[in-house]
Length: 418
Ligand code: SF4
Ligand code: SF4
Ligand code: SF4
Image (cartoon, rainbow, N blue to C red; front, side, top):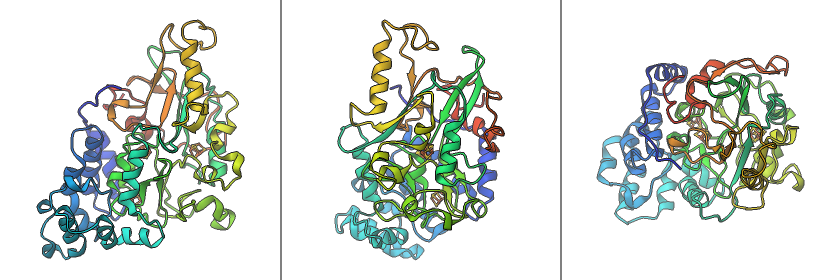
């Protein structure tokens, strides 16, 4: 993996993100600064503790509590967290300070946080901070437990948009909320018609989970899924602007599909948290890697599958447990790699004798759990109309320019707009 480069943000991106944040009640400047610094954290330019401390006071002031992911406690500076008596949130700060000094357990501290206490009352037992810490271990390459992920073979994609339609139908998404997104693009060193298939990358090092002031956006301990707790989300959109891939969709109005048409089974996960199907009004949504399937709520035969994978007739999407060497994504990647030496016919679009695989914006340091086969779009890639239009597929694409500009199609040079 290439070393993360310094993170830079262009003015147009900032203006667009500011506009998005201005539409909420939350502090736009705070959201934008946190988004930038969260990306610096995952790129290795800032420590988790530094990030936490830098924004602790401001988050307390804006939201009345600070339920962001806790960094390693030994890295926290009790003094930097401020004097509890100054800001009226003595409970959490005082406890954090005493925890850093070794006087209290992490659990006691989390109990004093607003939403953290709510999470504990839901029976999680570990609290948001522990959830994240354990997930980092599960996804840190030790190969233990389950780590859901995908191999997407772009050479096989024909741009039919069946994956998008299947996702929309299965999760009851409102029109325009495209949790799965397929770009057709032209690029200087590639042919006329290339595709990028883009779900949430379920990053192991996810900026979006770092910025959430209430702990709604989190990584699930048991399998590394990055999910949003709809009961807790306050719609500040901080996660949306911190994500380098542009995969978040805010539910502005009443959802097209009412609650009465969605079973609880599709919404409540195996921890009892509302993280599945489309979000309610005022709440953030994004691809969940079909969490209800992974929890067995659609039948045991659907565990380890996704709606988009099932709908793809071209064998482009391969979902499974990345910690299992025999899972579909690992097998497909292995077959592709093994074919490199002798079989140039099977993989027509790849460069000869090149194992062409990549992670999207790998240099950002997000450690995505989606691996691609094929060619990565360059910063000069231009989105063009595909063989099947969104209209033809009964979909709406109201994010076209925005998603492109978000940098989701750009490679290592591509933080700047194409
Ligand atoms: S791709 Fe998904 S996990 Fe990664 S930062 Fe964006 S929303 Fe978070
Ligand atoms: S999940 Fe909700 S509360 Fe958390 S950052 Fe995103 S929009 Fe804000
Ligand atoms: S994994 Fe599931 S939620 Fe994600 S894009 Fe595919 S169908 Fe949609």
